[in-house]
Length: 222
Image (cartoon, rainbow, N blue to C red; front, side):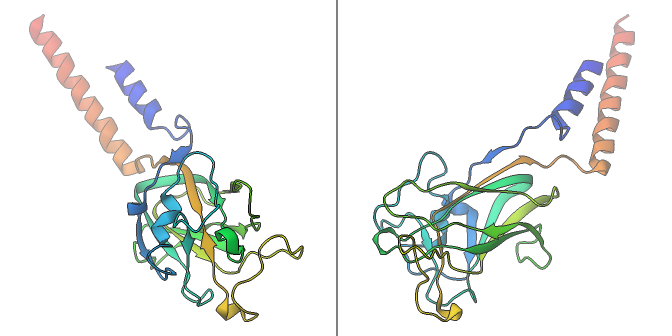
């Protein structure tokens, strides 16, 4: 019984669990504030969760938001249960042969409310622009918070730009309110949330009851 209790405690300890990729699917996207059209929908950010990513054609394998700047650019994601998130791999888009869209500055916020009435910024930064003709690069960002969350929201706030003329330039106009964003893939890593302290007490108490019952059975047999 003691060995069983120790094994259970070790299995549920946050130190015992190593962060791993949380494999997501298009169905994990439950809301978006804008898609360019049905082909470039937000759920495309979870259609290539393994392997290298090439973007040689406008094949609907990535997300583009409408031509409305950062006013309505966000994707809401349901992880299915609470996780302590460790890192995020983002694959920017260059919009195939047009080479004119992609995310620059962004943030990822986390919440346990599907409506994000309260939230915590869990990652932020600037994505490098992507160049045509090469596999997309995973750009990794470490989680800024160790809390346990079920919902994420990806929020781009500027377009990826580069001055060399090879990478993309802002689409579509000089007014930031007209700029449009995109993202090819998002991969999330973390561990399942461990029980809260109150739940730990209940589980330990339950193990104690099981042990007491086991001892009574042994005494009855003797």
